Length: 187
Image: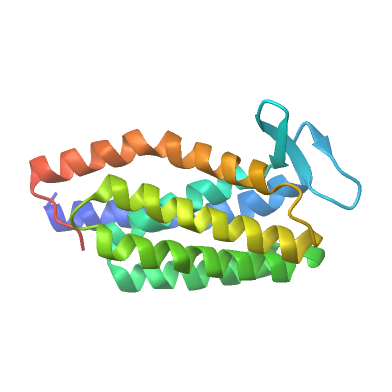
């Protein structure tokens, strides 16, 4: 398999996984957690004495996966993934969360894009971590405010998404080292 074919195959796998995080997050928020609040999300512990809506885990993964889509398939695919993701988010979200879900997704992924793009060629791991942190804070504030009119779960949302970024960091580091060893350049 040529390096270009390998890069494209990996990019399409990351794109599919990215797209799957959106329905997973929307499903989890209403079905997975240690408690489901009346007229609110299902929550789970993300730190001692701290709860967050369960969908945060998938949104943290989405931020990292979007970066990987852009690294493998290029900027146009990265932007396309954001737009498709926002549409999927609006189409799949429970009726009460459509606007919050779509707007938060769109703004957070573009915030991630703006930070990731200039850093990615020189410092991949730093780019993914920095852009994901910016994206997850934007997503948390916008989603909570629009969905619930409250920032009650802000700390938990940020921590829950940050856990997913932290868990993905060894994979990002491995991909960077492997790409350098193989001579696989970003798209």
